[in-house]
Length: 244
Ligand code: 4AZ
Image (cartoon, rainbow, N blue to C red; front, top):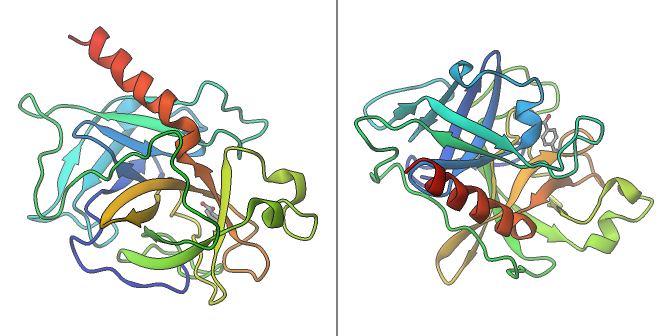
């Protein structure tokens, strides 16, 4: 994250760190066994056995008394996701492997975020939070402690205008940015754009893509989670029927 500030330990208890073979992505805990992330993180079809998920993490690669590490039972990229248009339908679900019959248990550092309903809409210019361990500048080559930053939802018509992203921005995406250059960057992908309503945080977007990081007039682009709420709920339900 560029332009943000250090997050307090435990302030984003739904953050998941995904160590995928030689790559890194973030994800968001939405229930005890399920993480939402970006499909492009799984583009090279890693084996489940090559993925580790760490919950309760503060520093990149840091494990300690507050972290819990899980293997992955399976991951499911959106059925309409394709490597030929890897910005579209950029959403995947990751199911954690149970340890002693259970997945994530709540602690002060580990707790799921709420999934929005399919009709949830936060208005243009609404302030939401992004967080992640990704690069803190375009030229950076290392990951960081957990950083958070505030970005505002940008009107779709503006983001899809020729001077911003034109037709690269499609339905199912949302743009957010800030005048002070807060933005996501490499390594933040798959992590949350969290919007709060009445004190409750919702997973409204998934960090997906953008032209560089923090460039003026080039906001971050996010997968619009409400559009995928039915798909997410159906995958989780299906999994309950087939694993009983
Ligand atoms: C990335 O490489 C990436 N500024 C993620 C988000 C953005 C740019 C790059 C948005 O994972």
